[in-house]
Amino acid sequence: MRKQRGLTLLELLVVMGSSALIITALSAAYSAAARYQEDAPLRRAERREIADFENRLTLLLEDAFLSDDVEDDNSYFIGLSTAGVSETSDTLVFTTLSKPIQGGYMQDYGAEFEDLNDEYGPQGGLCEVQISTMPTGDPGIIEGAYVREQVPADGDPTQGGWEQSFDATIDELTFEFFDGLEWQADWSTDEGVRRLPAAIRVEYRRYDEEVYHVMHVRLRNSDVTQEDPAVIEQDTGDDQ
Image 1 (cartoon, helix red, strand yellow):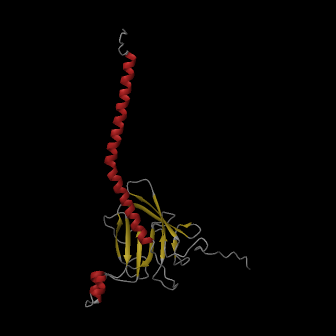
Image 2: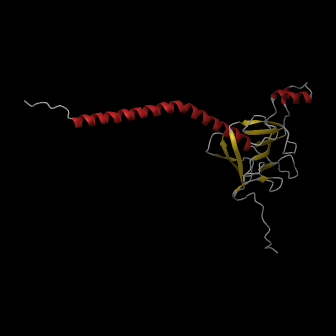
Image 3: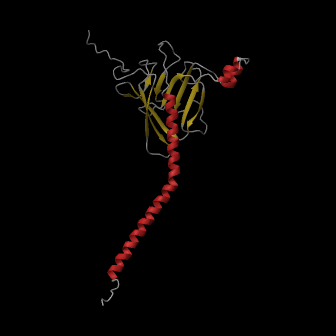
């Protein structure tokens, strides 16, 4: 009859080491799962905030409108650096077609025009929109990106209308404009070609973030294409 043999010291040490490795791996997996459960709601909320900002900004930008009348001073598209510290534009002022007239405004036949404006605000016409982290008026304690809207546009792109916080989490915000061939740092229909850029590239950074987010918005009312770019042809004097 064979005599049973017990565990040797070496085998016992191997078993103990393997058990320690398994316990360590399980502890790490549990810690990672716990951190994920804790961080996931915060990350989802951050993604929702980013998506909400980009969606609202896209809705404003893609409806930029420019009248076909070159003498119309009430429609324009201007991107410039108001801070003077960036090669790209930090402020964008443009006109859009105004929102539809409110039903209550149309149905209140007996009210005076001034009373309707006091209750519903001006209706119809072009709307002037300004987007920037540099407020036109006194921002008080509010920070971030601002939007200023004026209905109807009055031909003065520097002031007027109602300014409010657009997104208080935005620390930096810049714009670049695609002319059909390349990206431009600024744009002015008052000084250059009276056409809308084909697209806008927006770069922004939120407070407490080091990463920059980039988004592109196609302007639906632009007629600029690669075959018909919005560039000013230079006179080289070759045809003299």
